Length: 513
Image 1: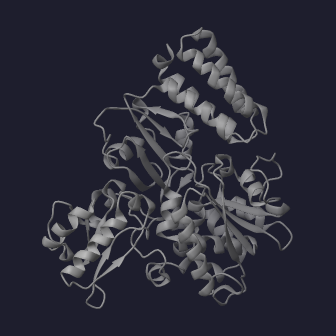
Image 2 (image 1 turned 180 degrees about the vertical axis):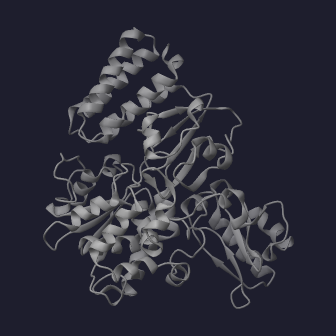
Image 3 (image 1 turned 60 degrees about the vertical axis):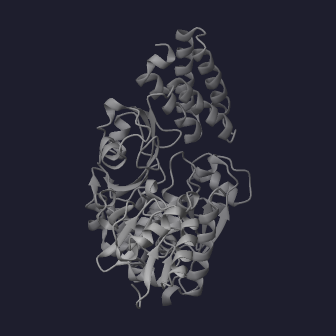
């Protein structure tokens, strides 16, 4: 309670809104007015338990108590059950923090998501916000770089490149015109972590961008945000305005000698613009098309200047590292995969949502302990990890540890942490066909292996599906995959063979084998 007023939390997250969160809010207000009850409704972000959305939480003396999924028609019975005091009800989930799905996680990057009012600077600061930034503003730029390097943070966008090395490269470049570009073009199937964070804790992204700007000496930043995320766009624009007014963007940030501002640019729906060089071309007003490397963006990027390109989760994790120290963050994870990863469970899954765990958790644990197996009740046949260009993993390999090197050894990849579940009705030959078709549609067209290889791959799989000379066409398909892997300019063409070859390897029966 706040000053005697009962506080109720209902997410403003797009996923929650899509299943009726706004209607639940309106119903709660109507019922409270009818009963002459004074309450405050806070629109927070999502906790990531998407199967329980709309999730309604009530602040009580014993902590926040959760109810969900709450439909408009449930509201009157919730009031009758005294839910404003944590009363029992068929939708009661208990104290939110004690729900098993949440209690078993290691919330680091998402510690505030679903807890605070996303656009309240007071809430943000009261829950640990700005600590990392203020420490960074008191440090020399090279010290910030060394701290991030020591923490072992790797790019969460999918490539897994060490963030500290990238920052050091840009830091060492001469000149005073440098850029920070946040890649928020989250286009992989089954992924929503970036969106959830931007809608539920937008200030942490801005905090990370300012820290990176001080580290490398940049004065301007851009957030490249996909047009398919209108709620995130609206929230981030408001967040930037709030930070400017608070003196946290602009000249002499928080009284320091660091000056930095952020601008938001909206993508036009091209998957290829998730690739860093294509994104930079789009930011410059050009066609989103892959550029040949070297030089890398950290040396010659946006407008030909040194540029840091990191994704949302990478930048949003740096404030925690600065606030709590490299050793604290490095304590999570295994091997060269340090820290935590927000895994996103989607597809035919009973408890879809976001799970933040230290690297090293097994795929089986994510699916069984968190996901609760399939929503349909059918057996799982395969999981695709790492987006539409990721490998299909069969049930017998579910004990693989979810970390970069272990997945690579298993012929798979982590990507952005998306996990899409398929039940036993899936046709893996059709899934392989989809991978080639997806590449055909989304290719920027610059390189022949990707542009033409995907078309020929789709045609070849068509022949295999119809039984046209299967043995020979499987050989042709393998040759095409090898060519695309070795000769494509970027990961669009280079990784398209991964889902195709994994499907053929693990499910030969679907290809007439």
